Image 1 (cartoon, rainbow, N blue to C red):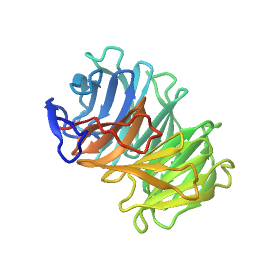
Image 2: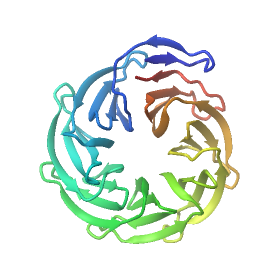
Image 3: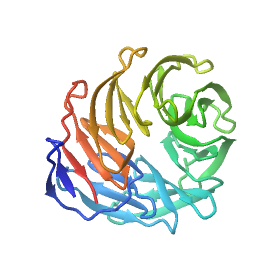
Length: 318
C-alpha cells in the first residue's frame, strides 16, 4: 500500500502494490531501489513514480536470508545468512538487465552478513561476531582478505582508508590501506551497546542502545585517538543513522531530524512516526528511503533538507 502522509494524522491510500513483506536494507541508484528482503531474497523496484513503484526484478536466495545490499556499476552485492547454522555468504548478482537477474558468484562466510559496503574492488562485511574484507575485483572469483573477530557487530562505515565499526559497547577503527591485514588503529568504549553508525568528514555518529539510548558524536580527525564531541539522549535506540551536511537522520520507531552544527549540543528539529521497525536509511536527492522490517519500504520527502519542517510524501508498505 502507498499512503500520502502529508497530513500524518489522516493518511490517505493513493495506490496499491503487492510487494515483499520484509525490507531489511535498501540502496538507491538512479531510479531504482535495491532491496534486501530477508527470506524473500533480493528485489529491484522502479521508483520513477513514487506513488506507483513497480517491481522489475527479483532473485531468490536458496533458503538464506538476504540482510544487506550494495551496488557497484552493473553488479549488486547481497549479504546473506543461514540462521540454522549461523553462517552466511556474499552473493554477487548481475543487474545489467533488471528483468533477468542472475548470480555471478558467491563466497561462503563464517558469520552472517549484517553490514556491507563495496568500494574500489573490495567488499567490507560486518557480521555478528566478525569483520571481513573480500576482494571482488574479479566478480567471478571473490577471495577473502583480512578477518577479525568482534562482538555483536551492528554497523559499518568506510571512508578514505579507514573502516569504522560499531560493535558491542564501542567503536573500532581499522586501517584499510592494507586490506590483507587491516590492523585496528583506534577504538573508544561506550556505556551501553551500540546500535548504528555513520561517518561524515571528521565525525562519526554512533547510536547507542540500552541505558541510556541516544546518539554519540565523535571527532575522528585523528583515527588513532577518537574523541567525544557530544551526546543526544533519545527515547529509543537509533537503529539507523545517516549524516548529511549538518544534519543527522536517525530511525528509532520513527524518524528524527537532528541538528549537529554544534556537536556539543545536538538538537532534535523534527520527528515523524513510522510503521513497522524502521532500520536502515539512505538519502538520495531530497528523498529518504527507509527499510522497515514489517513496515516495507518507506519514502519520506523533505525540501530542502536544511529546513526544520518535515514534508513526508509517501510510504510504501505491504
